[in-house]
Length: 116
Image (cartoon, rainbow, N blue to C red; front, side, top):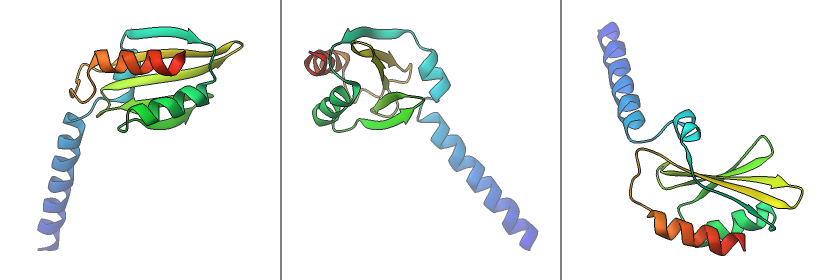
């Protein structure tokens, strides 16, 4: 009986993990996508990050090897802010699994507003 319960538990866990994987884009896939926006800004990465988080409540920030990354939507957009000698480099990549949470025109407006 215990072996049956254990097998059932693992089957349920595997099913939940599979469903979770279907709903989001993996980081490597998102990072490999062609940038939709690639601009330079005189503003510091921390200022741009704070501004975007105010403008887009669904944005989640994380630090990755000296850069700041913002995930927008259900991994639909990846905004990478990299410090440069003159401010920051901003790169925006879009997932093939766009959830429609933040439309591209709105994101472009928010990026323009926060980088100037």
